[in-house]
Image 1: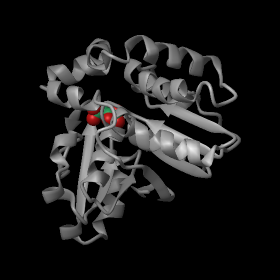
Image 2: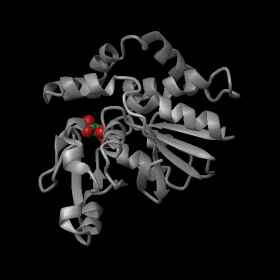
Image 3: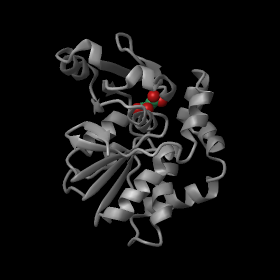
Length: 234
Ligand code: MLT
């Protein structure tokens, strides 16, 4: 487990790398794919997003931009999972750049398998890991601008805790994350309220988003990278 993309080793590439950004990028990606989006292309950089998406048919694309929890001007949508309904996203390609989550996904894009995990698709992630048994697995929290985040650690811990008896266990961060998850698993929403980004979202009227992001296993979808930086439902 790594708490931020900055802590991911520059060398080496695992069999499987999982990006976690519970509030809200990976929750939104899972929601969008479950709602029938064609795929989600992630960008760390907004200018790059605008450049690449410009050559894609405008009626088939949705530009998603978030910075500091707010929608970026000039984008079609921000990062609230509630905006990604089948009516809006079905068959569309989503071009997405967020403060931290899309940076994590870009950082791990050279792993053999790249997944996006959230609480809402925890079961699909665990099913995949149990079926494929990757020898090396990185779980990367997105944190907030280089700092640790409680909510991503709890999700990394949910994955780790569920595999604890089956796998040769990881670094101290994995043990700590599993312990955090086990202590709070019945009260994830309350935990997220204490997180700095939870507080930021509350100030932006994000209580419903937090409640949704704290739900476990409400979509059976596995966002999986099919080409660098492009995720589809596996
Ligand atoms: C991020 O990438 O930091 C987030 O997903 C922020 C958010 O939209 O809440």
